[in-house]
Image (tube, rainbow, N blue to C red):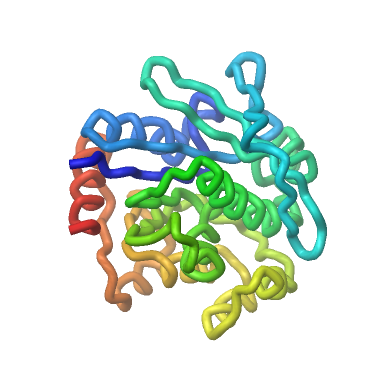
Length: 268
């Protein structure tokens, strides 16, 4: 039987960024799943604070060069790649000068969150999907980590729903306690509508705060994983109202097998 394919889309991965709960899972989960017999691909944003020389990033010319239109403006998509030799895995980076050249991740040196974090999330989601299409690599599981990846389920289940590459797959969204504090700009729903996403669910992000963005991702996902020991209370209550598989928090000693089993259950 052909190996199952798992696409990991992570907001943070160590060693490219400092160690956090999210970045450690971004690093060790793909390795653990690969060691359990599945094929993997891993993506993250190429934040400006990532040292390209030290981490030996290089551009993949055949995957770069596309322009993505975000809110009626063209933004070039640049794809870079690096290897984690000890894990025998590659990491693909979504890059763009407008969105990812600054030297901080989601907030400036004074802690002020970037005003365009909404567009950065839009660009990241579409950039990953378009790159996977260019790779002609059809995943069985798409596992999204962190709010920067929250729009991937939305796009996959709407404007990419008829794409022949994405069929018979499951989307899993992991929720962490990495909340952003300032809601996205008031025209966020209009930007999604511009991309062809409409319907009742857009009402959720009329106020596009962390909770509503998470609810939107949950609505478009097939399964949910609680990635932090403690998450927002409102989301905890919301998860009890949905009729979807939810995997409770697992600590470092057990999450690899638990996640791998969850993938298999989702596909059975």
